[in-house]
View 1 (cartoon, rainbow, N blue to C red):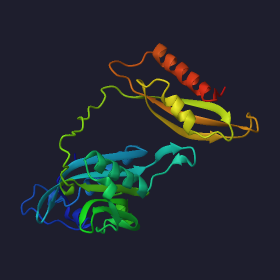
View 2 (spheres, one colour):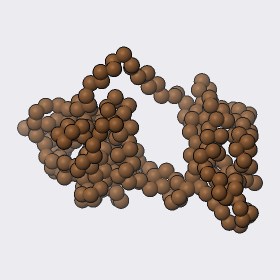
View 3 (cartoon, rainbow, N blue to C red):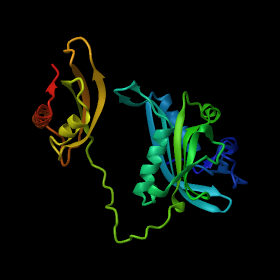
View 4 (tube, one colour):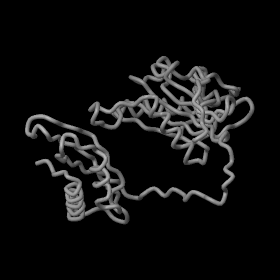
Length: 280
């Protein structure tokens, strides 16, 4: 949660403030925000200053416009992305922000199959690396993309920053009210990640291996991702190594060493059935 009030200079970078307090507690808390992104940028800078390499922030709050208060969801992606087998060090871009916006709109019940991608309307965004998601030419459900470099620099962040802002009150009411989504209940315990490297035939696709590993223990394994592909010394000419990260989610109690070993054994056995063997 960030402040609903901003310095006037920060508000001006996001189109200005429709409402400015005459007698603020502080000059730095004078303008009522017209966007959630200034607060998220300031929070990102604080995290970066403390060594955070991968910054993923979101906030649900209100924007204060001339016509009234608007419920909004803002998100910000900065720093490094998740490691990836194609590029090594993870990279993020405007399409990541778009994907997050579409996923959130879908979760909120928006008709994402009817969305149109058009240009962004705010000067906050980097020209050519941003856009808006709309229902028709006038109903804007979200803006997304890379923030303008001058704005990012003004907030003291190094590198690019990507964001999205979803206008929650613009999402049309669902007509199928008989189908309600189950309320999200976050797990109480932290997930555990284990990496495995498997040797397969060089022309083998990744999907069968990933599906086999995911099905090794459907209760404990919640995600499987390929993060490295290797060919070279130590492998036969017709072989390659594929490394996968397996995310395990404990339920009522943390995994014991014996339980982790048992799950690992299941993963190796499932991979073997898919034609892969554990790399020594």
